[in-house]
Image (cartoon, rainbow, N blue to C red):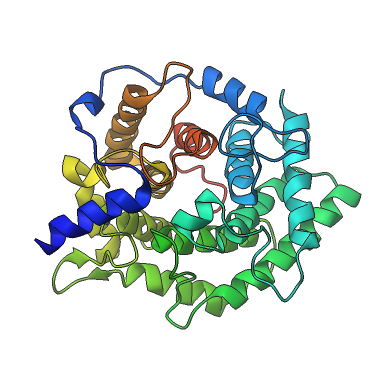
Length: 344
């Protein structure tokens, strides 16, 4: 009875009820990337930011994940057909990071959709990952100097955001994903040549790995709205970044990938599902092999089945933002085995 009440309450909080999953049965076809990319470019605001839809009020978290999609598709600060869009997005995020008071953790005003679902600090975490991955593509000069200064500010904020147990958030609907993004930002910064405090990395890794209990063989879901997928994706991401894909927690995470009920997440597709698929793909790509090949084929088929008529993806619950979901799915579709930008 308690479990049923929890699911009902979660549906209400997310602004949408569970839908029948029969219509989501994957079909054997490859998802299109040209149309969603064109949509994402058209949706960007003149100031470089992205919001939930076309030309809507922007926020840093949505801008950062949309910018990451462009980067992963080869549209960088200095290369690619859409480098102008990338330049504007980088400057939008850089300006937000440098404008925020140094003593504050947050760089975006409160009340956005990503904040409500992933936690108040999600803008800071995603911004760090985005600027860290963008930094190597920016030539030496004023723009690179501003981006590095902004990234340094963001790293300081992440350090202050870390809690005693190694997590980074307790608010939002699925804060475990926020903690996973904080870890992503730190590892990406280290890969970009930034000095990152080892103790902070270690605590963050330990928190994510400790979400698996070896005795009970279960993943904790208290910080993931009761949804295993979110915790498992974050755990797999942490294991890959730390080079511990052979650890019990990582092996347990990978064993869940053949379970359809697990892959359904909340029961319908929201931004949380899309970023969970993204993190899982990155983790499996770090080891390659048959597990990666099987997962990659399956996730391409799954994303093809739920791609909308205009080529985009949109959430059915929680993070319903078309920009956020489309960007996360495009990132998933660009991932290749053993070629990640921020390994351990």
